[in-house]
Every structure is written in C-alpha cells, then in structure tokens.
Length: 179
Image 1: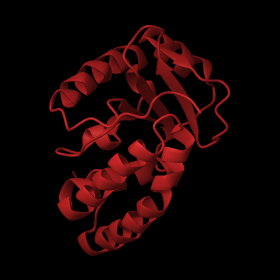
Image 2: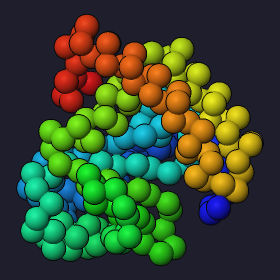
Image 3: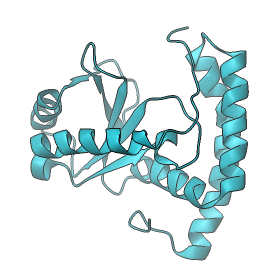
C-alpha cells in the first residue's frame, strides 16, 4: 500500500519541468554526471502517465558516493537509503516539492540502457505506447491505493514491449545516443 495511483493525460509541460530539474542537477553535479536523461512515461510525447518526472543521471562509478550524494542533495533531492536495487542509487524530491524520482546509474550498464531503449521505442511506436497507456489506466483503476500492485501489473507488458524494442534496436542500430 502507499500513495494513490493517479494517471494523468499527457502534459507537454512535463518537458519543461524536466529541463528545469536537469539544469539544477547539472549545476550541482558538473562532470560527475556523464549524462542526464528524461526517462519514464512523462518523457514519451502523447503518453498518459503518473505526473512524476523520472530523471536518470548516468555516472562513471558509484564510489566515492559522497560527491554524488552531496551534489544531488544541494540540487534539492534526498537520498533514499533503503532502496534495495543495487544497480542504482535512488533520490526523491525534498519534502514539500513536486514528486520527482532521480535514478543514478552506471554509464553503459544494462540497467542504464533499459529505460532509454524503452523510452525511445515508445516514442517511435505509437501502437505499443497506446497499449501501455491503456494498461496503466486499467491498473490505476484496479489498484488505486496499491502502488506495488500497479507496478507488478505492468511487468508482463513491459517485457513484451522490450522484446520488440530489442528487435527494433537490432534492426535500426539503436544506441543510447540515437534519439
């Protein structure tokens, strides 16, 4: 159980929100950030989403971690120490700010490439984007107070889309710099 699951129609303002956050992160992280990307559904034009900006910050190494942590905290984010996923370091918005997720991942790692491929594939394949959107609305209705149920319900379709995205990447020569 947890926060209410709400899906909102696409909002072009999400891109502007991302750009403002990206600017704050760049100012604080400097060269620690190899790249900063807008990921998740708010990064796919036309796709309904939870109104939460997801940002991926790619770094060369997690250690030493203090400079990364200090920079993101100075940018207004708080480190979520209890995150069990070892392929990223996770930050959230400061208390009272609009919900934001910052995923710090290793440059070139599979977990860094996955959300970029998923995003780019959905940006270029409207039919799959619409299938994903319909499922999100359905799951939000079914699990309005159960974020884990909502997330778990998307898993099968996400992997189905990723199988197609992988084929598309092979056929097109997609790279993380492609779009």
